[in-house]
Length: 334
Image (cartoon, rainbow, N blue to C red; front, side, top):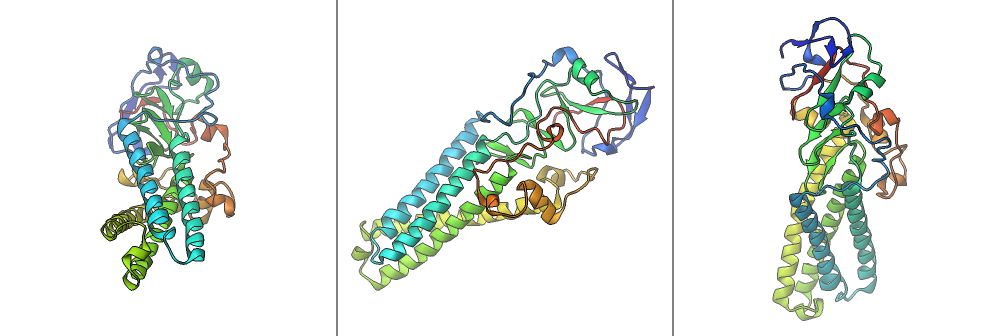
């Protein structure tokens, strides 16, 4: 990356003499150039954003279709497990125990999915790149803040703009259409739980399908299901295919997310090969930070809320400028 030329007087704010700076503070694979801050194009943010207290919902057709498919597939698995395998079963305790386990895991999976979808992933307030907000930051000569031209936001460290959510998201890992939301700082826990519970119910369903086939081969097919033998076989094969596909997919996603948490490096940061300019929280400490505390049953609870960390870091009021180096820079859209 080449030098970036900046000017000390940006829309009336004097941050220091004309100077040049290296783009190593952000190290994105894009060209940066300083521009005058068009404060008149940015609407002031609301006085109290309240993003942590409101339900977050993305109106995206593709994402909503993926959400519908996800829930329908879980309900299909529920139907086959309960009405094809467990209720017609000859062993009452086997049906009760497996029914409780499967339904509990399915409930936790859908609850985790809902929390991942309806939780603000860490959106930066829109339109806070105003003269008044810049003045309130009390910048020192030589400091720099970054402005996103898409949402008129001052971008904190490690924030990226999502073209679907139309917001800058803190520690954005990726946008997942299956939860119709970005996976970011505030909802990564719920996404990890969603992938884990889907993988578990997929494994459980596959195991029960194998036992049911063995049971039906030993007994008469008419006794092992309330459906006709051809219908039973088709339903079980479809469930087996669904379970295998989702087991592989969600297990890989679960492992990727845990690795991302333990290495304190998001998917976007790895993809862009960004140089680390932040203090990493690695391994078990990273897991405790992502799951909001020491290891407990609360880690597996999709209903436990993530406490709002320092408001400057988690609620989007002010960006972290501890590593800024020069003036106001408008970062090209990602």
